[in-house]
Length: 321
View (cartoon, rainbow, N blue to C red):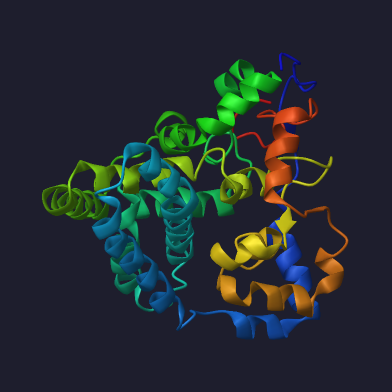
Protein backbone atom coordinates (compact mmCIF):
# COMPACT_ATOMS: atom_id res chain seq x y z
CA UNK A 1 0.00 0.00 0.00
CA UNK A 2 3.04 2.25 0.20
CA UNK A 3 4.10 1.76 -3.43
CA UNK A 4 4.76 5.11 -5.07
CA UNK A 5 3.42 6.14 -8.46
CA UNK A 6 5.90 6.03 -11.30
CA UNK A 7 4.96 9.44 -12.71
CA UNK A 8 6.69 12.52 -11.29
CA UNK A 9 4.95 15.18 -13.39
CA UNK A 10 1.87 15.84 -15.44
CA UNK A 11 1.78 15.02 -19.16
CA UNK A 12 2.60 18.40 -20.67
CA UNK A 13 1.55 18.88 -24.30
CA UNK A 14 1.76 21.77 -26.73
CA UNK A 15 -1.25 21.02 -28.89
CA UNK A 16 -4.78 22.39 -28.70
CA UNK A 17 -7.44 20.35 -26.93
CA UNK A 18 -8.62 17.68 -29.41
CA UNK A 19 -12.39 18.07 -29.35
CA UNK A 20 -12.95 21.23 -31.37
CA UNK A 21 -10.88 19.96 -34.29
CA UNK A 22 -12.49 16.51 -34.19
CA UNK A 23 -15.94 18.11 -34.09
CA UNK A 24 -15.15 19.96 -37.30
CA UNK A 25 -13.93 16.80 -39.04
CA UNK A 26 -16.94 14.76 -37.93
CA UNK A 27 -19.44 17.42 -38.98
CA UNK A 28 -17.84 17.64 -42.42
CA UNK A 29 -18.53 13.94 -42.86
CA UNK A 30 -21.79 13.69 -40.89
CA UNK A 31 -23.56 17.07 -40.92
CA UNK A 32 -26.77 15.33 -39.77
CA UNK A 33 -25.38 15.29 -36.23
CA UNK A 34 -26.43 18.93 -35.99
CA UNK A 35 -30.03 17.71 -35.94
CA UNK A 36 -29.29 16.19 -32.54
CA UNK A 37 -28.50 19.62 -31.05
CA UNK A 38 -31.00 21.20 -28.68
CA UNK A 39 -32.86 20.26 -25.52
CA UNK A 40 -34.42 17.02 -24.35
CA UNK A 41 -38.13 17.63 -23.60
CA UNK A 42 -38.25 14.64 -21.22
CA UNK A 43 -35.28 15.76 -19.16
CA UNK A 44 -37.11 18.18 -16.84
CA UNK A 45 -39.63 15.48 -15.87
CA UNK A 46 -36.93 12.91 -15.13
CA UNK A 47 -34.86 15.35 -13.07
CA UNK A 48 -37.94 16.70 -11.27
CA UNK A 49 -39.03 13.17 -10.39
CA UNK A 50 -35.67 12.47 -8.75
CA UNK A 51 -36.02 15.62 -6.64
CA UNK A 52 -39.46 14.48 -5.51
CA UNK A 53 -38.17 10.99 -4.67
CA UNK A 54 -35.55 12.49 -2.39
CA UNK A 55 -38.03 14.80 -0.68
CA UNK A 56 -40.47 11.92 -0.11
CA UNK A 57 -37.65 9.74 1.22
CA UNK A 58 -37.15 12.25 4.05
CA UNK A 59 -40.42 11.04 5.60
CA UNK A 60 -38.85 7.58 5.92
CA UNK A 61 -35.17 8.16 6.73
CA UNK A 62 -35.79 10.71 9.50
CA UNK A 63 -36.45 7.85 11.94
CA UNK A 64 -33.58 5.59 10.83
CA UNK A 65 -30.71 4.63 13.11
CA UNK A 66 -27.41 6.27 12.18
CA UNK A 67 -25.86 3.08 10.69
CA UNK A 68 -28.97 2.45 8.56
CA UNK A 69 -29.12 6.13 7.58
CA UNK A 70 -25.50 6.10 6.36
CA UNK A 71 -26.01 2.83 4.48
CA UNK A 72 -29.17 4.17 2.82
CA UNK A 73 -27.40 7.40 1.93
CA UNK A 74 -24.61 5.42 0.27
CA UNK A 75 -26.63 2.89 -1.73
CA UNK A 76 -29.77 4.92 -2.51
CA UNK A 77 -29.84 8.61 -1.68
CA UNK A 78 -26.27 9.20 -2.78
CA UNK A 79 -26.93 7.59 -6.16
CA UNK A 80 -29.91 9.86 -6.75
CA UNK A 81 -28.00 12.93 -5.58
CA UNK A 82 -25.08 12.07 -7.84
CA UNK A 83 -27.53 11.70 -10.70
CA UNK A 84 -28.91 15.13 -9.81
CA UNK A 85 -25.38 16.54 -9.92
CA UNK A 86 -25.16 15.22 -13.47
CA UNK A 87 -28.57 16.73 -14.16
CA UNK A 88 -27.00 20.04 -13.10
CA UNK A 89 -24.20 19.20 -15.54
CA UNK A 90 -26.76 18.85 -18.35
CA UNK A 91 -28.44 22.07 -17.29
CA UNK A 92 -25.11 23.92 -17.30
CA UNK A 93 -25.06 23.34 -21.06
CA UNK A 94 -28.65 24.66 -21.37
CA UNK A 95 -29.84 21.21 -22.45
CA UNK A 96 -33.03 21.27 -20.36
CA UNK A 97 -34.82 24.17 -22.08
CA UNK A 98 -32.39 25.23 -24.81
CA UNK A 99 -30.18 28.26 -25.28
CA UNK A 100 -33.14 30.57 -25.93
CA UNK A 101 -34.44 30.20 -22.35
CA UNK A 102 -31.38 30.49 -20.09
CA UNK A 103 -33.30 31.44 -16.93
CA UNK A 104 -35.53 28.38 -17.25
CA UNK A 105 -32.35 26.31 -17.18
CA UNK A 106 -30.98 28.21 -14.16
CA UNK A 107 -34.27 27.79 -12.22
CA UNK A 108 -34.34 24.05 -12.91
CA UNK A 109 -30.73 23.98 -11.75
CA UNK A 110 -31.80 25.51 -8.43
CA UNK A 111 -34.49 22.84 -8.06
CA UNK A 112 -32.16 19.93 -8.91
CA UNK A 113 -29.63 21.36 -6.47
CA UNK A 114 -32.03 21.15 -3.49
CA UNK A 115 -31.49 17.51 -2.38
CA UNK A 116 -27.72 17.82 -2.88
CA UNK A 117 -27.58 20.04 0.19
CA UNK A 118 -24.76 22.34 -0.93
CA UNK A 119 -25.30 25.25 -3.36
CA UNK A 120 -23.41 24.37 -6.53
CA UNK A 121 -25.50 24.65 -9.68
CA UNK A 122 -24.38 28.16 -10.70
CA UNK A 123 -20.75 27.93 -9.59
CA UNK A 124 -20.43 24.53 -11.28
CA UNK A 125 -21.56 26.01 -14.59
CA UNK A 126 -19.12 28.90 -14.26
CA UNK A 127 -16.14 26.57 -14.02
CA UNK A 128 -17.39 23.65 -16.10
CA UNK A 129 -17.84 25.62 -19.31
CA UNK A 130 -14.21 26.74 -18.99
CA UNK A 131 -13.18 23.10 -18.57
CA UNK A 132 -14.69 22.43 -22.00
CA UNK A 133 -13.19 25.44 -23.71
CA UNK A 134 -9.75 25.27 -22.07
CA UNK A 135 -9.33 21.56 -21.36
CA UNK A 136 -5.97 20.91 -19.73
CA UNK A 137 -5.11 24.57 -19.18
CA UNK A 138 -2.89 24.78 -16.09
CA UNK A 139 -4.76 27.79 -14.67
CA UNK A 140 -8.29 27.67 -16.04
CA UNK A 141 -9.17 23.95 -15.99
CA UNK A 142 -9.98 23.31 -12.34
CA UNK A 143 -10.77 19.64 -13.06
CA UNK A 144 -7.02 18.93 -12.92
CA UNK A 145 -5.50 18.10 -9.50
CA UNK A 146 -3.16 20.64 -7.97
CA UNK A 147 0.56 19.96 -7.68
CA UNK A 148 0.09 19.60 -3.92
CA UNK A 149 -2.48 16.84 -4.43
CA UNK A 150 -0.21 15.01 -6.86
CA UNK A 151 2.79 15.18 -4.51
CA UNK A 152 0.92 14.28 -1.32
CA UNK A 153 -1.17 11.39 -2.64
CA UNK A 154 1.52 9.59 -4.62
CA UNK A 155 1.29 6.12 -3.06
CA UNK A 156 -1.30 3.35 -3.29
CA UNK A 157 -2.69 4.22 0.14
CA UNK A 158 -2.45 7.91 -0.65
CA UNK A 159 -4.52 7.46 -3.81
CA UNK A 160 -7.11 5.54 -1.81
CA UNK A 161 -7.40 8.47 0.61
CA UNK A 162 -7.50 10.93 -2.32
CA UNK A 163 -10.43 9.06 -3.89
CA UNK A 164 -12.30 9.07 -0.57
CA UNK A 165 -11.68 12.80 -0.17
CA UNK A 166 -12.37 13.60 -3.81
CA UNK A 167 -15.60 15.55 -3.12
CA UNK A 168 -13.70 18.04 -0.96
CA UNK A 169 -10.98 18.55 -3.58
CA UNK A 170 -13.67 18.94 -6.24
CA UNK A 171 -15.44 21.60 -4.16
CA UNK A 172 -12.45 23.63 -2.95
CA UNK A 173 -9.94 23.24 -5.80
CA UNK A 174 -11.52 25.98 -7.99
CA UNK A 175 -11.24 28.44 -5.09
CA UNK A 176 -7.49 27.80 -4.99
CA UNK A 177 -6.61 27.44 -8.68
CA UNK A 178 -8.90 30.02 -10.24
CA UNK A 179 -10.93 31.99 -7.68
CA UNK A 180 -13.74 34.13 -9.05
CA UNK A 181 -15.96 36.68 -7.32
CA UNK A 182 -19.49 35.37 -6.60
CA UNK A 183 -22.18 36.36 -9.06
CA UNK A 184 -25.73 37.48 -8.28
CA UNK A 185 -27.11 34.12 -9.33
CA UNK A 186 -24.67 32.33 -7.02
CA UNK A 187 -26.04 34.40 -4.14
CA UNK A 188 -29.60 33.50 -5.20
CA UNK A 189 -28.59 29.83 -5.43
CA UNK A 190 -27.14 29.97 -1.91
CA UNK A 191 -30.19 31.69 -0.40
CA UNK A 192 -32.58 29.19 -1.99
CA UNK A 193 -30.45 26.25 -0.86
CA UNK A 194 -30.05 27.45 2.73
CA UNK A 195 -33.80 28.12 2.94
CA UNK A 196 -34.52 24.58 1.75
CA UNK A 197 -31.98 23.15 4.22
CA UNK A 198 -33.61 25.09 7.07
CA UNK A 199 -37.03 23.72 6.11
CA UNK A 200 -35.68 20.16 5.98
CA UNK A 201 -34.22 20.48 9.49
CA UNK A 202 -37.34 22.22 10.81
CA UNK A 203 -39.84 19.66 9.49
CA UNK A 204 -37.76 16.46 9.38
CA UNK A 205 -34.83 16.94 11.74
CA UNK A 206 -31.04 16.79 11.44
CA UNK A 207 -30.96 13.14 10.44
CA UNK A 208 -32.88 13.92 7.27
CA UNK A 209 -30.46 16.73 6.46
CA UNK A 210 -27.53 14.43 7.14
CA UNK A 211 -29.04 11.84 4.79
CA UNK A 212 -28.97 14.37 1.94
CA UNK A 213 -25.51 15.84 2.56
CA UNK A 214 -23.84 12.53 3.44
CA UNK A 215 -25.33 10.94 0.34
CA UNK A 216 -23.86 13.69 -1.84
CA UNK A 217 -20.40 13.38 -0.25
CA UNK A 218 -20.28 9.58 -0.13
CA UNK A 219 -21.38 9.19 -3.75
CA UNK A 220 -18.62 11.53 -4.93
CA UNK A 221 -15.85 9.51 -3.30
CA UNK A 222 -15.27 5.76 -3.16
CA UNK A 223 -18.50 4.88 -4.96
CA UNK A 224 -19.21 3.15 -8.30
CA UNK A 225 -20.98 6.15 -9.84
CA UNK A 226 -18.05 8.38 -8.87
CA UNK A 227 -15.81 6.36 -11.15
CA UNK A 228 -16.68 8.75 -13.96
CA UNK A 229 -14.68 11.55 -12.30
CA UNK A 230 -11.51 9.54 -12.94
CA UNK A 231 -12.53 7.70 -16.10
CA UNK A 232 -13.24 10.89 -18.04
CA UNK A 233 -9.80 12.51 -18.30
CA UNK A 234 -7.13 10.60 -16.37
CA UNK A 235 -4.56 9.24 -18.80
CA UNK A 236 -4.78 5.45 -18.79
CA UNK A 237 -3.35 5.26 -22.34
CA UNK A 238 -0.59 7.62 -23.45
CA UNK A 239 -1.72 10.27 -25.89
CA UNK A 240 -5.42 10.10 -24.98
CA UNK A 241 -6.88 12.65 -22.59
CA UNK A 242 -10.63 11.88 -22.75
CA UNK A 243 -12.24 8.44 -22.39
CA UNK A 244 -15.74 7.10 -22.83
CA UNK A 245 -17.59 4.41 -20.90
CA UNK A 246 -20.59 2.68 -22.51
CA UNK A 247 -21.78 0.51 -19.60
CA UNK A 248 -25.08 0.33 -17.69
CA UNK A 249 -24.30 3.09 -15.17
CA UNK A 250 -25.01 5.53 -18.00
CA UNK A 251 -28.69 4.77 -17.40
CA UNK A 252 -28.63 6.68 -14.11
CA UNK A 253 -26.04 9.34 -15.04
CA UNK A 254 -27.56 10.94 -18.15
CA UNK A 255 -25.01 9.16 -20.37
CA UNK A 256 -22.08 11.12 -18.95
CA UNK A 257 -19.98 8.06 -19.80
CA UNK A 258 -20.20 9.05 -23.46
CA UNK A 259 -17.55 11.59 -22.63
CA UNK A 260 -15.65 11.89 -25.88
CA UNK A 261 -18.98 12.36 -27.61
CA UNK A 262 -20.02 14.94 -25.01
CA UNK A 263 -16.85 17.02 -25.37
CA UNK A 264 -17.05 16.78 -29.14
CA UNK A 265 -20.71 17.85 -29.13
CA UNK A 266 -21.65 19.61 -25.86
CA UNK A 267 -24.83 20.94 -27.51
CA UNK A 268 -26.20 17.38 -27.79
CA UNK A 269 -28.28 16.22 -24.78
CA UNK A 270 -27.05 13.14 -22.94
CA UNK A 271 -30.03 11.11 -24.14
CA UNK A 272 -28.85 11.56 -27.75
CA UNK A 273 -25.13 10.97 -27.28
CA UNK A 274 -25.44 7.26 -28.15
CA UNK A 275 -26.80 8.39 -31.51
CA UNK A 276 -23.61 10.42 -32.11
CA UNK A 277 -21.54 7.27 -31.60
CA UNK A 278 -23.90 5.31 -33.85
CA UNK A 279 -23.60 7.86 -36.66
CA UNK A 280 -19.80 8.18 -36.46
CA UNK A 281 -18.52 4.88 -35.02
CA UNK A 282 -15.14 5.01 -36.72
CA UNK A 283 -14.23 8.09 -34.64
CA UNK A 284 -15.07 6.48 -31.28
CA UNK A 285 -14.73 2.71 -31.53
CA UNK A 286 -10.99 2.95 -32.17
CA UNK A 287 -10.23 5.06 -29.09
CA UNK A 288 -9.38 3.55 -25.68
CA UNK A 289 -12.51 3.22 -23.56
CA UNK A 290 -13.47 2.02 -20.09
CA UNK A 291 -15.74 -0.95 -19.46
CA UNK A 292 -16.29 -0.50 -15.72
CA UNK A 293 -16.21 2.51 -13.40
CA UNK A 294 -15.50 0.18 -10.47
CA UNK A 295 -12.49 -1.16 -12.36
CA UNK A 296 -11.40 2.42 -13.05
CA UNK A 297 -11.34 3.15 -9.32
CA UNK A 298 -9.44 -0.06 -8.61
CA UNK A 299 -6.86 0.55 -11.35
CA UNK A 300 -6.40 4.18 -10.35
CA UNK A 301 -5.61 3.17 -6.77
CA UNK A 302 -3.56 0.03 -7.45
CA UNK A 303 -1.71 0.81 -10.70
CA UNK A 304 1.54 2.72 -10.02
CA UNK A 305 1.44 4.14 -13.56
CA UNK A 306 -1.78 6.04 -12.78
CA UNK A 307 -2.45 8.72 -10.19
CA UNK A 308 -3.18 12.43 -9.78
CA UNK A 309 -0.23 13.19 -12.10
CA UNK A 310 -1.84 11.22 -14.94
CA UNK A 311 -3.46 14.22 -16.58
CA UNK A 312 -2.70 16.06 -19.81
CA UNK A 313 -1.79 19.66 -19.06
CA UNK A 314 -1.22 22.76 -21.18
CA UNK A 315 0.66 25.94 -20.29
CA UNK A 316 -1.39 29.09 -19.87
CA UNK A 317 -1.01 31.36 -22.89
CA UNK A 318 1.56 34.07 -22.18
CA UNK A 319 3.43 32.17 -19.49
CA UNK A 320 7.02 31.14 -19.91
CA UNK A 321 7.46 27.46 -20.76
